[in-house]
Image (cartoon, rainbow, N blue to C red; front, top):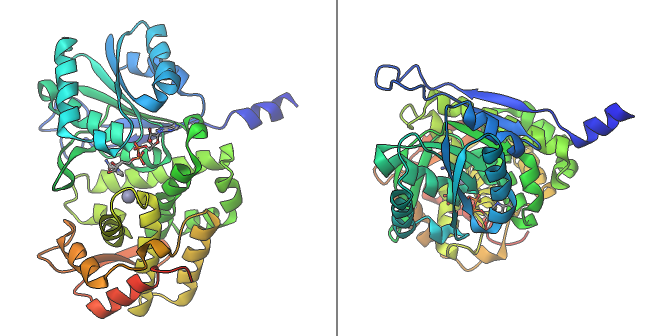
Length: 387
Ligand SMILES: NC(=O)c1ccc[n+]([C@@H]2O[C@H](COP(=O)([O-])OP(=O)(O)OC[C@H]3O[C@@H](n4cnc5c(N)ncnc54)[C@H](O)[C@@H]3O)[C@@H](O)[C@H]2O)c1
Ligand SMILES: [Zn+2]
């Protein structure tokens, strides 16, 4: 009975090693490898983890909406480990990923007279992680940063891999740096407070990992969709852990998007970015656009005879059972020529040619260039209205 209680309330904790030293040992005296800690109730122990990194002083930068909850837990844990803490908060929302907010943080860091021994802890979703990572990368030519992701998107994607940055009026993520964290702490308990739409949206990236890299994981998602949808703790722990492992697999082999492997993470994204742009940012959440983008991509793959209809149906069924959109009236009145133009401008295209990451079976993708625009347009039309 006691054992059952324990199992029900505590899930296993895992450490995932991100190994990045081989390609930088000559240029960096400090190890750039780090661990991702996944589990529940681990925010409470963050002080010990950071202290073990020889840190005596820290600045906690957290999303305003969770400053008093998770931000406070992190601060208490650091203080309990005898680390001196200052706290800063960031207004919630994508607008904070800006140079204005960066400058405010740089000035706050200067006011606090922090030095290179100070650790920065980014507590929040992808917005706080990307912004704080960028500010940490640039202040004093680089401060140690810990990523403490509190959204599903951040736990399975943005906190891992060292891409940091801010937006310009001309486009998203145009200014930034690769800056790996000293560690990542993904406490799945923080996801309990996430609004449902945000939570479901994050699941699109999870389905993406199954489609591009891991057929067994895809099947596990199919078998456990209801539990995942209901945020069952054990299931959620596996979702975050396996996704983090798969992202790590890619980042370790192509940290700076040079070999082309990291590009597989763009599955569904060329379409998704165009959907987000044409509908205006905020109409569709990113994960919703990715879900629609993956449906357009898998149908495009099918029309190119890369795979058969059963794969299309399995992906559609999984996305639907997780509560993600597979077609939407929001895209009904959009001009497909505009889509094509926007996709051609996407920075992931090469020389203006449309380039897509397309599956040829579940768990495997390839990059395809020079695809007939008519097929692309037909694929887009399939997600333009509720069918
Ligand atoms: N660096 C990368 O590799 C990478 C990868 C994917 C996405 N991103 C970036 O991540 C950003 C999106 O991240 P996001 O989806 O986490 O958005 P977000 O950071 O805006 O968080 C979404 C919302 O959830 C709230 N929130 C955060 N944690 C919460 C919690 N535990 N409980 C309740 N509410 C909470 C936030 O206040 C916000 O309103 C985008 O800017 C995107 O460009 C970066
Ligand atoms: Zn994405």
